[in-house]
Image 1 (cartoon, one colour):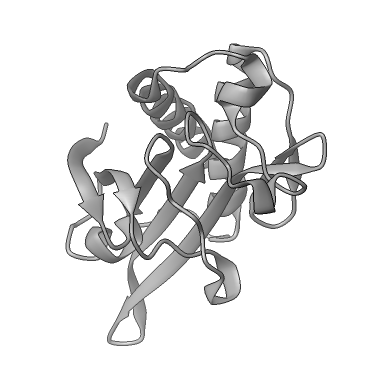
Image 2 (cartoon, one colour):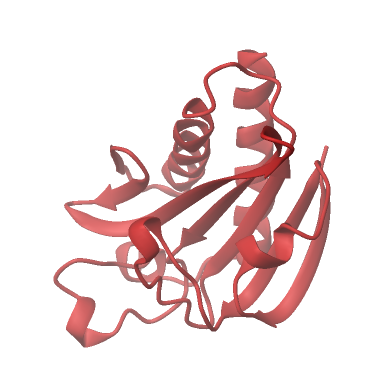
Length: 168
């Protein structure tokens, strides 16, 4: 399936993932320069899930990978007891508040896609700053209990792998 690499702190899991080949997953407890679409800042406080999957895509429509990642997280969160909605193209929301962001990047070599990096950030046990409470929420707040990030990561990867295999 995937070979995982854990780090305490990285600038960005997507940046680190670019150093690895297909089939690797980079996970950090914290990111100092996490980012989202359009170079937006992704606040990556300790306690959340921050990971990047590296793939050599075997499917034709590469945009599907972002949706697959969103569905994998959505299924994982649903198993914990919370229903989320996908906000196209790359977010998951719980009652209108962001709980997950996904950043997919293509890495080219000689004008061909060499690999893709799919970054996934999930607010799990991290505290969302008061200034963002109106637009972001964590699983801990929703479920009123701490969640096991390692189990969540494992389940997200399992769900993603199932969706990916079904698409090729």
